[in-house]
Length: 76
Image (cartoon, rainbow, N blue to C red):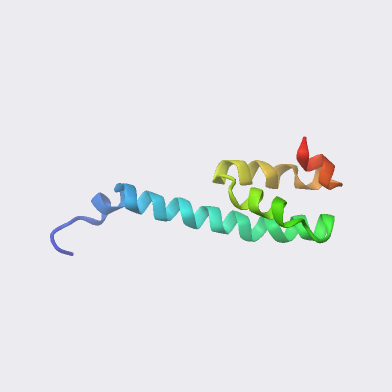
């Protein structure tokens, strides 16, 4: 396409940003409902903070989600 190799496009900042954003949305789609199911209705301030987490932070949160038993646990 336009003489640009697909491999070259995959290494652009734009492409990497889109991939990262997609990963973040995927992690949020998993973590947010699990948090809600585990803790009940979540305060808007907490949801905003969770949505601001990086992919690595969301993955770490998903790893410890079973140990979370209260909102206070998340604050630690």
